[in-house]
Length: 602
Image 1 (spheres, rainbow, N blue to C red):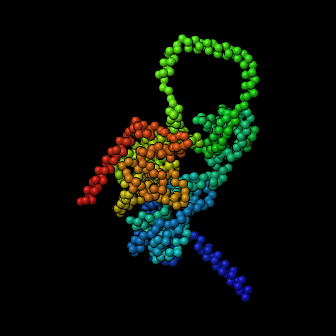
Image 2 (cartoon, rainbow, N blue to C red):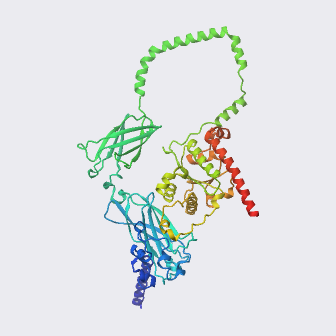
């Protein structure tokens, strides 16, 4: 009996292990013929579609840059026999992951994309299309995977993991965007894809720091100070990198000290020591050291230079000099006193008249005067702030009147000119957007900007209609670099990012929402109500405080900037232009609302 129970126990454990392996294992694509996929034969459950398949079914000849992707793969490859199977809604995939695959080429990376299908519409799922694009470039790689036409997945299959084929030859230390679309793709459906931005590994992450000339930097740094002399010791690069010179930079109190370093490799091939000159005592320095190569990685470290002790030398020099100087000082004091007494006797009436003219402050008035002086004292920016100004990306709606867009442009000009901030605005970078592409330009700046300001207005609630497809000019439909990705789409991406960040408990200080005086709080989308909100131009001081991390109030004082007061703001050319633009936009928005109401009454 005990033996039977023991055997059953092990059999159950083995069954559980096999079941777990089946659940976790990923489904990889297979080579199938197009006829097998269209007819629903066995062994064609998840198949890769090659360029030859697309050419055979559709007749395209110029598909090299897009791989096996086509705009409507379900309709063109499966829908000719049964159009109804390509007309259902299918939700976007979940849990899109990017995994790196080991390869022998040290100058490139290879990835594999994995995902899980959504259980919404999974019974009508016909396949997936995976698109990989380099941010800032036009290179596109695409893979298409289809199920055979008779396959219908159950809801429990949503826990299965599907994988793409490898994407080889990706540049190291570069940003890419991967998009996984669920098929079919009805034209009016918006939630059929999931995008993810990732970076390939750096040379040091893949090959090790000792094999990468660009990524190498000193890792062992020692500092020694003897009196006013500071000596720095660091490890040299390995000989195979052929790095012959180095440099160091030190920053403190707005001053920069540069040191050119040329080691003597005949004395020591592993370490080098040099003296850091021209450093002031009793000062904290932020220093960097790097190889003297283009775009080399810099190692940052801190150096505190101790004050130079001069008390003994001063005491020895002062003692003999006092013997000579003291009698002269006493004689000068006596002469000055005699002169003052003589002048006082000669001009008593003038002194009295001056005293009567000067105002006399009571003790209460003196307290008020001191309090007012205390409350208006200057508040300085933090000393540990970055050397470069913060980068602010401004997004807005393009569906309001031109006066609103002009207000946004003049707001960006004022912030950049008077608020020590680098403003990024699409109206100023049309050339770079044309080179990069709108999608890549916005994705890059959303990630790289320190802050994002969304100007909210009624136009944010406007939903544009998708363009009608034109079968006669299908090559133009393949243009992934079109200008359709506007600032409105960027605002939608930011709203989604804010929602995800709030759900995960992340910091939301990067995102801000603002309205002009002619807009209402109802114009702020629900997601943007989770972040800091400002009314412009009233809250310019608070916006400045947010951008630079300086407190508006502190015990005994508050931040007061003349440029942001009502009087000082209107005296600045940029401020006066912004006020005029907001006033004109207010009139134009009211006229637009009046015309809309008249149309609704008709």
